[in-house]
Image 1 (cartoon, rainbow, N blue to C red):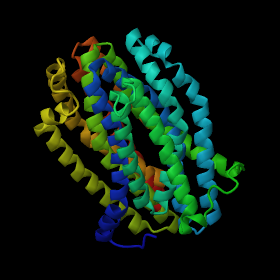
Image 2: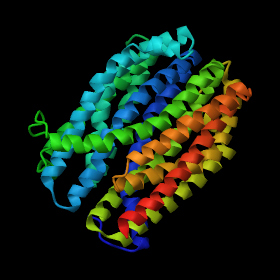
Image 3: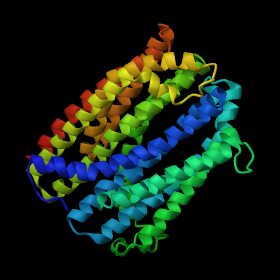
Image 4: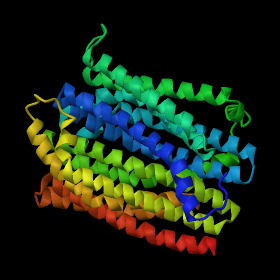
Length: 452
């Protein structure tokens, strides 16, 4: 799969595996981006409600994604040791855990309105967000299954087909948004609810396409991951669960940090919340590049670690980190020199709030430029640690940095000191910097412990 080579080879192989993963992550992010743009064109109140609703949904989705993330290093390890049965069982149990998790959280998402009100959000905005979430909640199970299948295919280096499926999903989602949000082709104008229905239909159709492809593909059919899918292998179920839940909580720690900022900014007003949502979408796109490289790092490290190839393992980590740093510099240049053009794409030209939202959004992108290196650094380090199957201590570090330091700093700077949305994002930067440093120390310790 990955021959033992020098640093030059590692740059090439990391790009070969990482670029499709980046493209996949980016395309999935662009789907949400297009939702935001099209809802923003429909109306600012709808945009604010969508930001609130998608933030609430994403908190639960990212926690459940931990089981899918656990599939990637476990399948890569099984490939390294030629254990086809383990590949099948790991993937199957990842699907089981994802579906069970989705069933457990759908009721909470369905009745989200009161929860949002208890968190201090405007009652009317909370009601709009709940209506949106009631349709989107149905997509939780297929969305998580897609993540499991993505991990399975990535570990087998079958990323190209998945990429084309996701690109097709992007086009489908955009078309459905146009028809259902704005009432085209004879359909009723559904606005925010139309965006929710479009997203759910896209997730269901994408899942079906991937399942059919995996069943029909000659090479993949030998793993038979859907064979006797009703049967639970409790040992593998426990392995995926034990590796996956800390990953989910680690992601949750960061997502709750960003979700918490949405709640805090929601206390300030609709325009700051809209600006926050747009700026966050832009930052999320940048983050997808590093996430893709991080996943490539996970696959390679788990493979080399199983093969006990320390030199290739170390060179692979260096190559991925250097590539991530180059992407950070490119993002900083865009955020500092083209903020108005980027932000303006999210709003209708004649929107009366356009100027206020763009002015605030420019300031937020400057803040984003500051914390880019820490955000990229922490996700790259986490990818390496997952390759070593180290997930519990990083989870605790992330929880401390984001919840005990980052969120309180956001509230203190944004609300208590009155710096508003920029102050809230300043708190985010503090949390990200601390987590990045703590995880860096952990990786140094684990690398020396496990490889020498």
